[in-house]
Image (cartoon, rainbow, N blue to C red; front, top):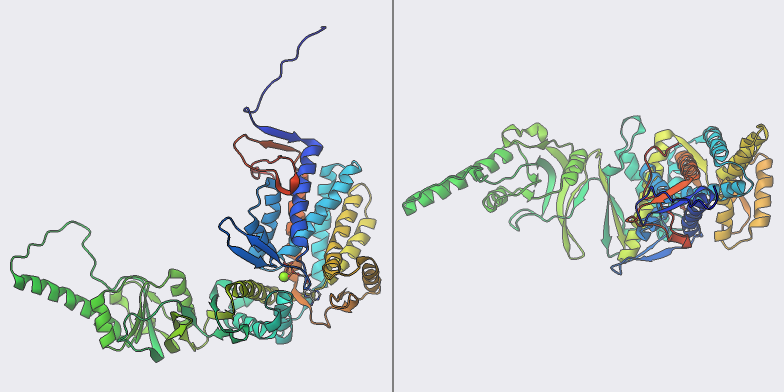
Length: 544
Ligand code: ADP
Ligand code: MG
């Protein structure tokens, strides 16, 4: 048996990297924490902004969690999983992306401490899942049923606090609430696509307005058409108003100039007939998704019709929602009943561009929020803030349940989950406790970002919650504990339930990985100073 050499066995192609066990876990957790740490400083009204410069030198200044992470182009595979948390939150609500990511980071940080104490990752994962489902229960009991006008406006304002929209948040909150209220459908469902957010540089934020209809960046087809049409009857047509070229190659032999003229006359007649057909329904505005022939334009203008061509499909759909028109493909079928209505259709110049405003619609189910601002950076950041506000108001209407913010629900969760942990036995108890403690990161970060000392304030906050003051939160301006509900810091419950569930989901997913195999071709690693240790994306079946 002596001196026998052991042949190494290669199961992976040359150049592949593999990390296993604790090292793999440690790398993944470190990368995930690095991501959370990056956005942490932006949380809350006193959070700072980030300036991100892309490879082309374009600059984005933002406070929005998901925007920061998207612009950063993160490559480390498990760091990317954290970015996914932000994206889920963004898709589901729009707001709360930073909260979700910070929670995920803290859950992993606390898990790491348990790993150091030799608690098995599977035990931590199980404890986290138990805590997560308990957290949902607690949050649902915590939520208040209140979605009156005042509350909705407070929700919109809370969403915009600390963003570029700060100084005009009153105006913008009113607009956001009105927009949502207009497009709300059955069962309080709101399709955010029906609120078109348009930006215009120039003017001040206060000039922002809600258009009861749709604004499209197209001008009318000819100066011979009226610039303004009152009491508009609108036809939405999604075929060309042109003579289609034959699909097959056809030869038409023209021998005399007369024949040529006859041919052209024929074409003109066909176009004139098409216009006749449209105007015979009473339409005085035509919005066409495809092309419109110059000859047709001429006839439309002669009839005093306002026409626009090559309108995008999504704008056509919104227009149908706003005006009640039906999009028609076959001109033969077009009838009076297909037309939509708008009080005014008008071409307006904003800056040096012409736009078509389809406005003053009665009971529009799609509207436009026109955001104004001095510079492009301002309008971009305001757009993000208003989008968050719209998402929050919609989420509040949908479920009807809201909570106060400012760290109050997270503190309430932390304490209720600690009580739950105490009712358990076994090693999961440790994990549930770790989960409970992780919730405190939100109020603590709000305090830290305000430049205040967390120790005293956190103690006061806990004391208030012990005294059953469930909406006790952080007043980021004074550093004291306040009643967040009375101060009007209100958010939809859905932000919290979603943030907790996606944060827990990703934490469990990261914890369950104990083997990272990176093929030689794949990129990854390096993010946050961690050694390479990627797994080339998420393996299938790695879910919870
Ligand atoms: P997110 O991307 O998670 O929405 P934000 O930067 O918008 O991150 O911060 C949201 C947090 O700020 C929430 O916990 C919210 O309750 C809190 N918050 C918002 N407005 C106030 C306020 N006026 N006072 C204290 N906390 C606030
Ligand atoms: Mg927010």
